[in-house]
Amino acid sequence: MSENEPVRRRRADAERSRSAILAAALELLDEHPDAGLERIAEAAHVTRQTVYAHFPSRDALLNAVLGELTAETLRAVDDLDLDHGSAFGNTLGLIDLAWRTFERHPLLLHVPAGHDPVAERLEQLIRRGQREGEITRELPVHWLASTLISLGRTAGDSVAAGRLTARAAYKTLHTTLTRIPQP
Image 1 (cartoon, rainbow, N blue to C red):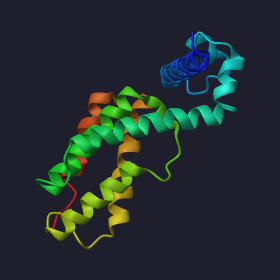
Image 2 (tube, one colour):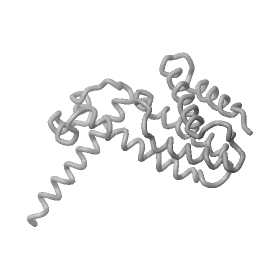
Image 3 (cartoon, rainbow, N blue to C red):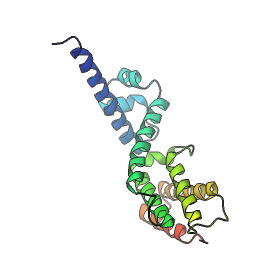
Image 4 (cartoon, helix red, strand yellow):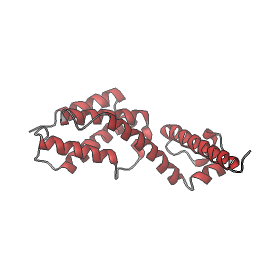
């Protein structure tokens, strides 16, 4: 056994623990957004100390989970190939992808809006749609992107509050988006 082998084993063990914690946190927080670190440690089959070794606070863990979700979503957004085809059609595709992500991860409904790389991609898409005449130029890009995101959050909130089923909320969102006046 080499001198470096125990170090590599510890690193591999630490990475497995970190991955297990993130996976457990995502699953548990989707169902119970207020779950604490002790409950997450139980779900990950690690000790609370192990959780704290990787994430010094619940906020740090939540940020890591959100980082993983953002990376996963950006990979899916990249697969949409938003630079080609109809900008308005691609906008609907992006909204559809975001809706499916919210359905899989309700945790995202409890996260305050802020800097979001998906929103940046949406703004780029709207700019292209405005240049190509598919999306109105009468409204600022930021306004249109914020409005679309707000409509999506409102649809998700309606599901969370039991006012609409997920299917009805999605249909309502999609209908609203396709009825927004275009140039």
